[in-house]
Length: 380
View 1 (cartoon, rainbow, N blue to C red):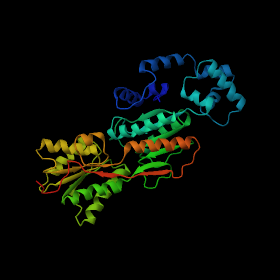
View 2 (view 1 turned 180 degrees about the vertical axis):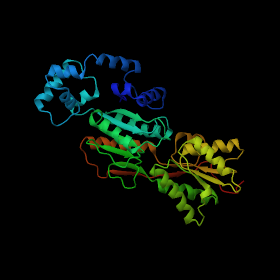
View 3 (view 1 turned 60 degrees about the vertical axis):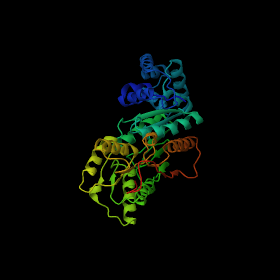
View 4 (view 1 turned 90 degrees about the vertical axis):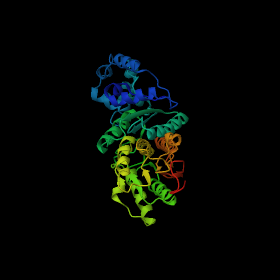
């Protein structure tokens, strides 16, 4: 199924342009795009020859009535609805998603709101979403702020959901939202929501359990001085992973030392800087738990620069199990991101079709994967 970008939004929103161009350059996703950017510009120019004012004049109604019809408002009579619909078709104003929605009350489009389509976490989520939309015959429209490090405001996310679900999409998936709730007449499903007990449909992974297992793995290998580089402080996942780390230390009778715990933002560059600080301590850690695999790769970069051998001098474990972690031999916690995207899409489309799920909260269990970046302390 193609990824659709609504023409007028594409031309007005640089983030959508960035999203589409990123997907054009990225051959890792088995998706097709319907038209080129220049073709979309041409389509937009052609469509400008017929405006909403032309539709209103031909139908003998006000512009606001045409707008209400396009947005599926309930305060329009069936006769007026049909008359405006016919005029839109006759004038060739039916290329937009809004017009498709007007005719069928459905757009057959799923919206996706995420921090950064270029981030490995996002790519794996999109793999699962793509598989589901292909199986179920839907199209996909993506909004992104373009930077995984950005603390996207909850208000902006809520505005995105309102914009998409008012007319452009039949439902929306939002990944790692800062907002805790959304007001929408159409279904919204969150992946990795920012609340322990989501009020709406969601797919979550066991962040606390996974972080605890990662730390217990290092403890079982004999490590006692274990550093921690966290994630984005505005996200619940980062807090839960820190809590899992702290609990594992406490259960093993190991003091939680603030000097060994540094903030991060889920990026390799920040983790590289923070790991330098940890390795510069008078009594540096013998192991580091990084809150995601991108951060773990940052630790590996610093270790190489400073001549620290992995895992002989320092054991490193991450979280996510992105493909790059396998390539670099990083021990990690697998949270089955592709499955999260797939399950979220199936859940959303069931809701779109009026099928009530037995359980609107789907929990994906994490799993420890031990690779060559961790080993027993003191082993040759």
